[in-house]
Length: 88
Image 1 (cartoon, rainbow, N blue to C red):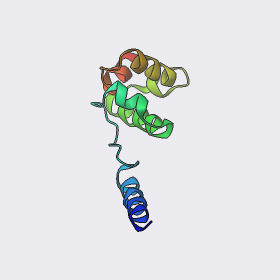
Image 2: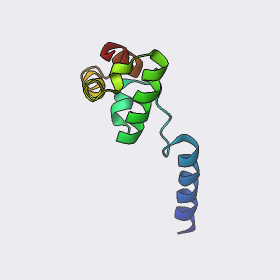
Image 3: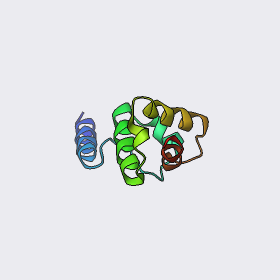
Image 4: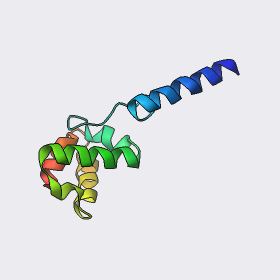
């Protein structure tokens, strides 16, 4: 029981630091596979961040955001940055 509590505490601390337990922050260099395996909130934040970095405002529009997912689902070995650049 004590080991379980320690693990939960460690995971909680990690979540505060990196956003989710054991999952690194998504970036333009993240693979589409990793992007699609992340939770929805992490994906949304990553698209906002990378689109801002790349000046790709269309990626965060109501039609552009689903296109990023579509591009990544069909090209899991490509990067998130690539999918956002293709979306515009």
